[in-house]
Structure formats: structure tokens, C-alpha cells
Length: 376
Image (tube, rainbow, N blue to C red; front, side):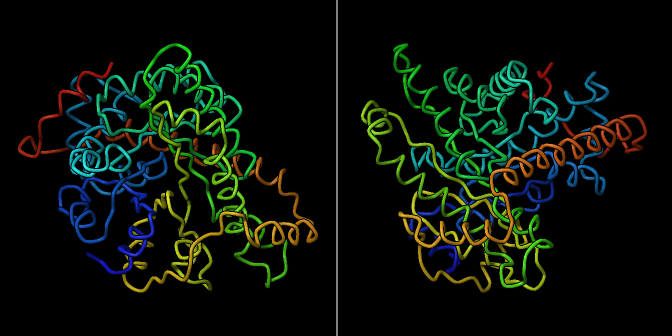
């Protein structure tokens, strides 16, 4: 076991990999990360899949076979994604079982085209959850206003949800309250409360967004400060009577997850966000490059303060620098949706092109899992 990632585990933080591609699975690399680097989960998003499927030929045989089976567009993509995620879920299943469902998860996102469509988001989440039939699959739903309504309904319907594209304390609290409302509705309906959820707060994009607007001494400070504010709100929720009533009735707390923790500033430490966001009962989903860097030379210098510590004063400094925190959080969420939408559209174009033009020798074909073939 790697000493650096073991420190995170020993302090109660889960390490998940923020990446998925076919070679990661077929080469045995993911299994090595699980065994050697304490990786206990995996997340994906449209941008990750667009890069994985669009580069190289490792998916071409599956695309052509699925196309011949009558699938196209997003139906073909979700079938393709489930080939990878099913394999990853199987590798992580021992962790899922040993942790009683706390870890060992993979994630699949609904189409970003639905980010402002509550009803169709719920339909898509239900469809993916039912057809995947994987106990350790989170369905990712963005924390947009429409997404928040969809999250409540999905939780009530018994669908494990990874809430994505959260940026501020207020956006995080909206997601947490949606989870609570869904669970409370289940309790009133006499349904079991064993529905898991995580809330994903994006960190590094704050610092990218304000870099050109602030003095150099303020660089790479805002994302961490906002994350600490979210952690303070998380700790307060864990102790609240409302949350404790559900826990007493058998519910699991919705865990806080740090996302976008790869350093974007070439002048800063490549492990900066991982080192700064160590906290018990949280998850850090780490890009592959950053994971390897932390395993090589990362340091744990402390854990986050439950009371927020310095975070509020740092955020106030940025306000005095002219940064409108609330407006920027809304902008970052909108930009996140647009970025995923761009990746999604590019992904659909790649799949369409490969479906019709891939020239793959028949001896490279492989059988598509039945789960994928059954997707309508």
C-alpha cells in the first residue's frame, strides 16, 4: 500500500479516481490502483468519456457492434459507457461489500442536455439505474435548480445519486436539503432508508475563474476557502436534529465529495488541492495524473477545521477584491453545464462518425454485455 494515500484512508477520507477509459480496465491499471493506491471508487463525466472514446481506437469494435445491433447516438453511448462501468463496478464490488456500501461506487451522468429539465432528468436517471442494475452505481445529476428538484424525486424513487456541479456553500446546502427531503418522503411512505448519495463540490475552477481579476498574492486561495465553507456546513448538518432523526431511522449521511482537485496553475504544487482538503467522512475524486503525483510526493499536513477556521475571512478578502461570490458560483455552474454539453455534442459526433466509418477487422470484435444490449 502506498504510504501517502494510506494516510488519507487512515484519516477517514476515501480516494476515488476521476477517470475511466478502456485501457485502464484491460491493462489491469485500475486493479493496481485499488490494491496499491487505496482507490475505493471511480467517477466519470461527459468530458472524460469524450476524451476516452474520441482518442484512439480502443472503443471502435464495440461501437461498430452496437451500431450493427441497432443502437445509435446517446443510446449507443450509454451502452458503451456501461461496458466500462460494469467492469469497474465489478472490480470495486469487494470494497462496496466490505464497507457496507460506503465505498466501492462508480458514477454515470445523465445527459447534460437535461440540466434544466426536471421531469426528463428523473426519467433518464430511472432508465439508467434500472437498466444498469448495478448496486454500486451512482447516477450523476447536476445541482442546477431543475436538478435539485430531480434529485429529491430520484432519492424518493430509490436511486443512488451523485450530485454534480456544486460550487458554493449555498449550492451544496440546496443539494443536501434535496437529499433530506427525498429521504423524509421515503420515511413517511414507509420505505427503507438505505439510499446512498454524495454531493460533489468543484474546487479548482474557482481559482481559474478569478486568476486574471485578482492580485498574485490571492492566487489559488479561493477554491480551498469555499470548499472549507462547504465542509463547515456539512459538519453542522451531520449534527443537526433533522439529519440525526433520519440516521436513527436507518439512513446514511450524504457524503461530501471534492471534485476538480487537479491543479490548473503550472506555478503551484501539483498536489495542492488534495493536501489542503483532507477531512474525515469525505471523498476526494482525483484525476489520474494528480493521484500519481500525490502517491509519489504528497503530504498530509493537517485536517480541515469543522468550524470553518480561516475560510470566511479569506472569502471576505476576495469580496473586498471585487469578487461577487454568489454570482460567480452561479456562473461557474452554468459554465460547467455548457462545458459538459460541448463535450456531449462532440461525443455524439465521434460516435456517429465511428459508427458509420470504423473499419475494424472481424477478428477484433467482442461480445457486448447483455446489460448494454438491452438498453432501448
